[in-house]
Image 1 (spheres, rainbow, N blue to C red):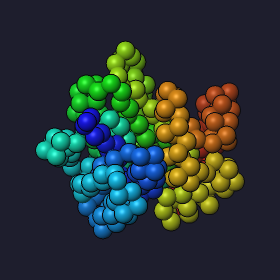
Image 2 (image 1 turned 60 degrees about the horizontal axis):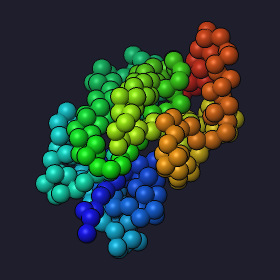
Image 3 (image 1 turned 30 degrees about the vertical axis):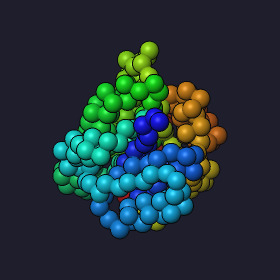
Image 4 (image 1 turned 45 degrees about the vertical axis):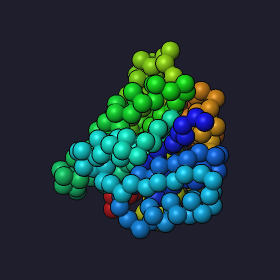
Length: 264
């Protein structure tokens, strides 16, 4: 009998991460749910265990802003003999507002979560995954990865990093058993703050919006098809195409006018 494998999802208690955990469970996967240690994480894990009793679900409450978190996650997997064949690096932190409106510590935490922890987990889990016949990594970026966005500068820069890192590493891994898919969603209403920002940004944001379930299902399908960069939704793909022909300064001015709305 072959050894069971697991999907590991970070940020699994809310939003896109939760949708990934639920969608993977629906497709028959065993799932490791990693998120901040809060009641919702246990609630989601128990729900999946009850709904899919023949599969295996385990949780780890941990703060990925802590520098040693990736090593602790790998140790947890090794100690419990969990073999990961799909790693979904979803945990991330967004924000809008003038750069000087937040303390430096906020941005340090944001960069730690959005970039450093993602790189750490990818690096630590790759040997385990490369030893398997087939394995996948999904790194969650954003449509913001394609633009310079005033009033959202650290977030967009961190997502550019995720996109660039994922594409570069995917090339390195050609010929191996591991493939990387980078997800670049537009608006995804995951909490009241995001929904309010979507409302303020107007029609363009609403046309681009997809539910977490839609995003997770679409991404997994495209991953299985070998797609390297996934942009859920017709309008986000259209906006990206249009953005390539709009002069940079014009594009920057448009984005500044849009995102300054979230700064008031």
